Image (cartoon, rainbow, N blue to C red; front, top):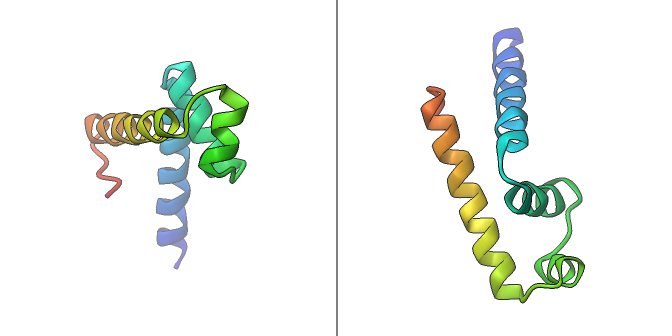
Length: 77
């Protein structure tokens, strides 16, 4: 359905914009985990942080994205 494809494209664009507005550590961990498909140990090594710190940072980044999307009237759940 074209309308579903358009809606997905719009959501993807809004999500990309929300990621771009995150602060650097959150943006970086989202980029590495979701777009570069790195695992937590690899991200931890690259960022010189513990694996637990990376997990916490990732969870906070996802929470910030969800909040941003809600403010924009989107519910990404």
